[in-house]
Length: 407
Image (cartoon, rainbow, N blue to C red; front, side, top):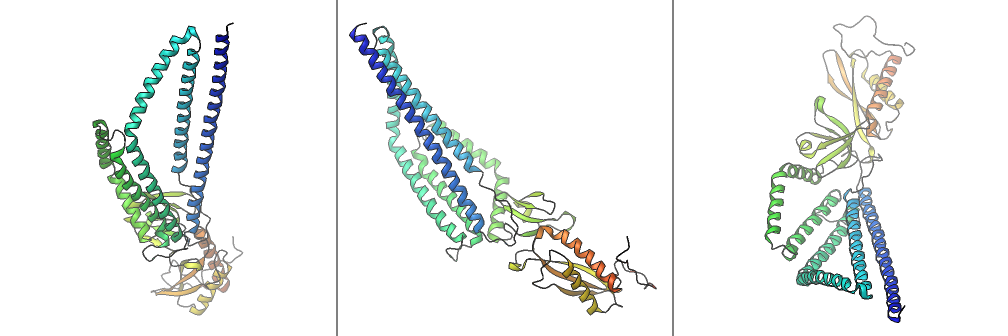
């Protein structure tokens, strides 16, 4: 074996070691970037959770919190881009290593020259294109950096308002989260418009045709979406309902009752007493009456009521006392504020009484109401007072009652 061949093998081994070191460095850096992306997603989710907990809730239900769904997908996309860049760089290094090693040996020197020429032409074409587009790319990077800084500044401001750390007369804490997203969307929209002329290929006919096609598709297919979004904005800024409110949507048999779980841009989600999630499009929500039991309740709990009719032969003070006694026996009703009784009507056959009380958990309203009705029957039967619903054509000879021990 000649000295030149030994030297060639030595250089090939050195280049191979350098290649392995560079490949390890590339993939190690790619792993660090993926780890940094995971940390960024976690921080973003923590900020969204902090915004959720900062919003004032009108009851004490522990509703599930939804982490923003687009962040994991964005992380997956960026991680895929990092992986593709690592693969591209690794392939370029392997191609260069192969060409360089082939040049070291006389038998493969011609193949090495051809591979080197092919690689040189490809790099020259790509490099020339990049150099030509470099000024525009720099402008795009600057615009994106400025937009990102503006979004971060606005997010800091609106999060402080949402957490009630800062008070602004023009921004309500309940609408600060939605306003933050709208301002961020407006900033990025302005950034896209400003950066568009500097994007590589933006002046080509193909790029312009694709832009026109996408614009036409959005215009023709977004009428319903825009309607839902505008209805969602009206809901948010009118503060008709918020997360945690106990509401009834609509009237009559089609009414939907539950606790607001999420007020989204396109639809609002409720959870009813059967632990069913109900999704109502915002446009449908805006076309129906919204009865909010929690808006004015403050810290006193949700106010609810039930009615009962008693004959005129019963002393009204006794009726009041029996209804309050039934409320005191019912679990789930607050003793403070105290329940109270109203006389709603003086009918032809009976007096209509209404008991009003506060409860802690709106989703338990039907169960608490059932227990209250049971206690009302027991209390009135124990006192010998007849309940007149349904009413009678004439007063019966004996009070119509059911003893407690009866089956």
